[in-house]
Length: 328
Image (tube, rainbow, N blue to C red; front, top):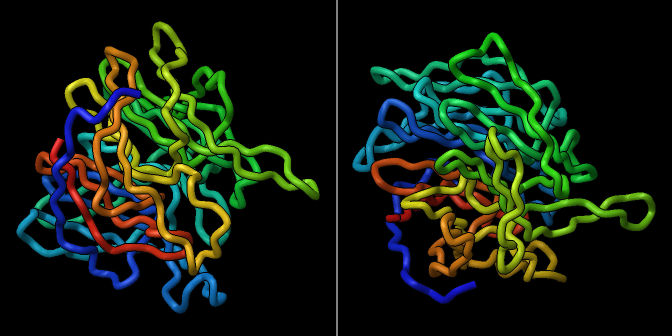
């Protein structure tokens, strides 16, 4: 990994109007507005005091950077930990989970003339949670994730949905030749989609699976299939995704690098605050400064020239309601 060529400038946007904030939300941009939906938190009491995780069906809309958040409607059901995809038609919410387990639901949120609509789209062939998505030429690619909650399995399969040909439904692509994974990052640039880092599973004691932090990176094109790229300099999981792309570079902001171990949740010092930049043409990773709000398990969306990151975990069991934008 090369040195630090530049520092990213950050701006703080209006906090989400919830005291706790959420992890695992969906986010995107439509009709000029920033849309945030779903996710989960511990509203009654902290996780380490026995608080229950609650998924939400709330939807928040920020029409402009100088305006306040609105809450015009709700999702058909509480859900989170799925994938977000921005399309001309709206923001696609793909799969995820709730208290009942993993979901295969897919719905489209659209914002027009001050009104929010939610439309059902073709369901995923399988229920998935902890997966990621990227949009290339109007086609939504969804890769990885777990078939069930509990982090006991990790998928290597990839699915695609052509937004202009919904009648075809989701089609299975060539699977990733590397490890199955969840809480990874995806991006789209040029003619390729990218799969970066994440978490695999490995056998642990008593028949259970344990986390295996990953550093490998891959690209996929229709013509060439999968290609192994330069490894990340360190493992990164649960960073904002879809990862923002600008001028041939893919950015990873914070996330979990597995450097913090052995802490009880209430004493956890928080996730690491460093960011990485992948230069596609050079196949090279570069450090690009610190993130003012180190977070994990959160979405990212381009809005008004900013790569916006929404809420996320400050540390296990503790959310944030802050919203930040990176000037790329």
